[in-house]
Length: 102
Figure 1 (cartoon, helix red, strand yellow):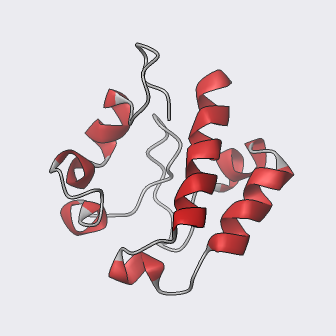
Figure 2: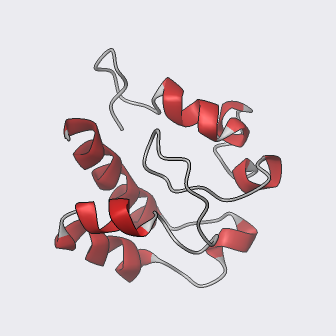
Figure 3: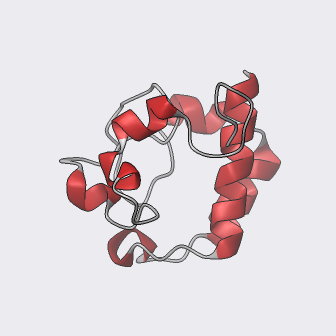
């Protein structure tokens, strides 16, 4: 993801939504810190099931190749053990990059 200042990393707005990420644990405790799982689109805040990456509106805003990459890399249970694959994280970065440009 690209920060507002142009550097790589998580945007402050995203960190405000997901305080577990700001705790310095790489995000593994994010949903343990949050009362609910939220759409990953920075600024959205819509609750979604933990296995879902985004709310319907923001999911379908993503180009199909990014959506396909997220689903291809998704492993059932990763939302519980907080251990997504490198491929899943790379696809997520692509989604954040797309959203930061829209």
